[in-house]
Length: 358
Ligand SMILES: Cc1cc2nc3c(=O)[nH]c(=O)nc-3n(C[C@H](O)[C@H](O)[C@H](O)COP(=O)(O)OP(=O)(O)OC[C@H]3O[C@@H](n4cnc5c(N)ncnc54)[C@H](O)[C@@H]3O)c2cc1C
Image (cartoon, rainbow, N blue to C red; front, side, top):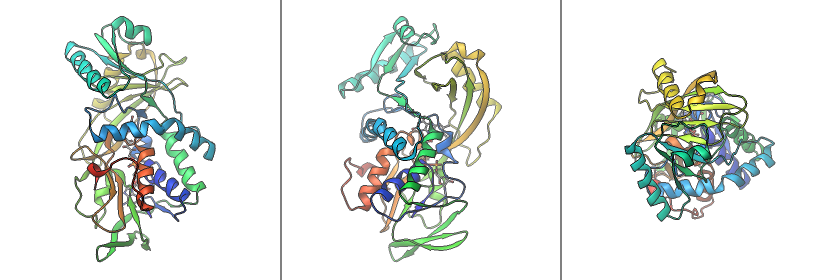
């Protein structure tokens, strides 16, 4: 049984169903209705991560699987997840940002990863839409993007194809135990028995009654996104900055984000948020001032106190977590699903997950 049908719940359901498990997904709302559909979709293993270590390795392991994952999901479901080899250009707008970019490039190159430091002219040759006031840029040719709404749809369909059962509008209130073993869940509709339960409830994961004490608790961190259209597309690369990002889709849509707001489960789109995001986007890609505004939304990132996901078996027998992926849950979808599948098959996951133990 899986609690939550965002990208994490559906991806785990797909891999578990494929491995022969009978899976039921319990979703308080609709599959993919929360953080997963609100995301920008940057597969930013290098552009998003602040330093080397196990989390960085987890991100790289997941990014490495994405191209094949996209093909697999399309073959199974007919849904394209919008995987684009767009690369990410990280713009440095002032000398302090320039110094940070150089330091980041150094440790990544030591790790054997591709990153190119570009001066202003080189950066504008690569991406002519960038501002001519930047001092330079870093180019991450292996960070790419997907369309998160399409990914969430493909994963729900993939889970369905391998036999997972969906129960939407079914909120889990409480975990049910016998001694130190989970035996089911209590939902608004009543008791449901299960010998294994995976908590994939995003920002709500720690709200369920009976959840054991976690390594780090999960809380919502709101983020707003502004969407616009520029046709024909104005630029090709994901543009990342120290204050936000701008993601061009090949069909001319552009999403800009985001804010980081610690205000509980409030998903309001605010004037201050729109102002900050559009200002940041136009500073990096000035041509966007003529783009047509088509919408704005916000979502709740599942943030943990130490910034690491809660991934693996908990202190309670039969209870697993695939939660707390914060700003990188789209990127971390394929590896999370493989880890959960391997654990339920009593196999050692192919990457060390000790630092992420719930
Ligand atoms: C503005 C924004 C931009 C982002 N950009 C990126 C990006 O560019 N790249 C990236 O990798 N990541 C990004 N993220 C992060 C990413 O969206 C999340 O980490 C990821 O979607 C988390 O997936 P999830 O399945 O854990 O959570 P969710 O998608 O929130 O799914 C959890 C589900 O569980 C359900 N649920 C919760 N509690 C219960 C319950 N008690 N009973 C039943 N159902 C329950 C919820 O209704 C929900 O549908 C972004 C997030 C935001 C908000």
